Length: 157
Image (cartoon, rainbow, N blue to C red; front, top):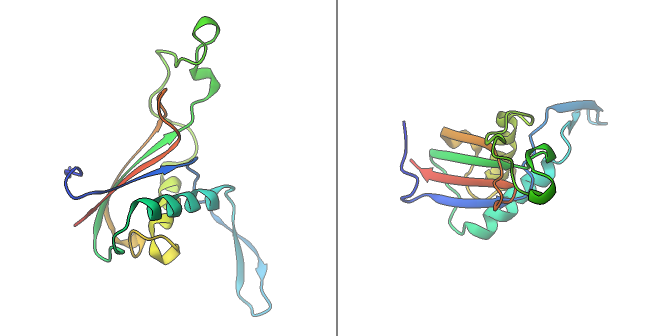
């Protein structure tokens, strides 16, 4: 079901390299008997911080406590093999892929991004990621005039 995100949507541009939310790794028990868990993915903390920082800079409303529709476009860096050499160095090859069919997995990128938006985890846009009732995502390579990051659109239901 398509939604018109142009009307009433909150738009946030996050700059930085999107990173996935890794699995938790068990490191042992604390003195109080609680499990000590750490992230298996490096960089996820930086990406969550980027999402939190950019959303705080761009969104000045109150935390949304009801259902939301979300679209997230992830812009990933291109590998060097996508660029021409010689006289046309720096230009993207005409046959280079548009969509990014490699790691990281889109579902893990979404998990990390939603944590950055969620007030429960330190964000400022939605109260909790369980409020997302519809999600549309895309993971593609940057074009010549884009930087890596994500474009997030939030629409209150």
